[in-house]
Image (cartoon, rainbow, N blue to C red; front, top):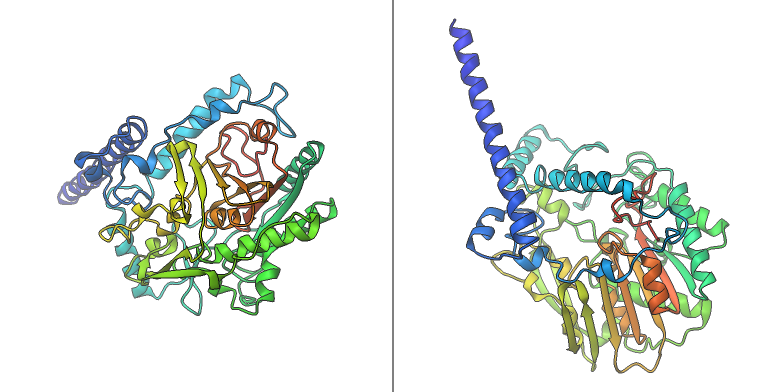
Length: 449
């Protein structure tokens, strides 16, 4: 009888904890998706409910708002717009379910009430065990390299479908009279510097090698940025933040110049690269200011924040800068491209300071260099590694349009046919590859319809 009594007490306690989590998740889901996401509410209540979330950092309305429905402006053609089938009305139910599942996953992981406290306790437990091993399926799995850099690992993927999507999209561009370049951005694990991991624990480089090989065999123009990094003679890791998966934002200048040089070498576009080097920029340092995605996962129990750098040109710049999804339409110097709200001293360890560059992941950004005499229009399709490159690329040409297909759910091909770019550049880092393309939600990086 005594055992049964304690079993009931334990069961009641466990159910109480699960019930509290369920209520907290429901409250945050309603606040984040409805009050903030739909009604754009930014007040003491919404901030209190969302406080401590790893990606919202206290959540303001502008963190989640999408003021202009860009997707409605660029509709899909009846034939589906390319190599992938068009959206079928019969699939709308499954799409809604998929979007709901995606939202619920966020609120039962990174946005879980007490997430930071639980993560911190988990890291203390791992430290007691001297545990530094991750599996592919482990949520929050972070590996610490010998020099203290934090990283994640990826499983081997069959990239055939994604390579075929790029090849078909390139053919579409050529049919429109548009030049096309695929750029392979790196992952933090280096196949040379990390030979004990690359190809045994992590397969990002092998997946990227397969992608580059398949595209090259099909005649696609490819720039392998990994090789260019090695040619600099610098340590591969030094290109990245110690606590984050991104390369350092100031390296966006180097990468932007690299892309423009490659485009000029292949198609003789006349870019102005005269000021695209660090000697023409003032660097503003923020010591131990940025705690990256991996740092947030392991918490300050196991790491310290990265230094962060903002780049300011020492020469005149005159941009017309637009982010339609934020109703942002500015004309001014280089600083119009910076989201200085990411520099809140009270929240700097919660906010992603990397996203100060060009306001982070945006569906569509348009930059016009009003002082440029080169009328070339570049359409730059990229993941978050490209966020820090957009404004730097605009220094060398007149027009740069930037699209992140994870957020741009309209028709990419409709946008191309309306804007008629001279060249399309697709750049993805080597950790984004999967074996299949999700065509239901229009949030897949390789859905080029």
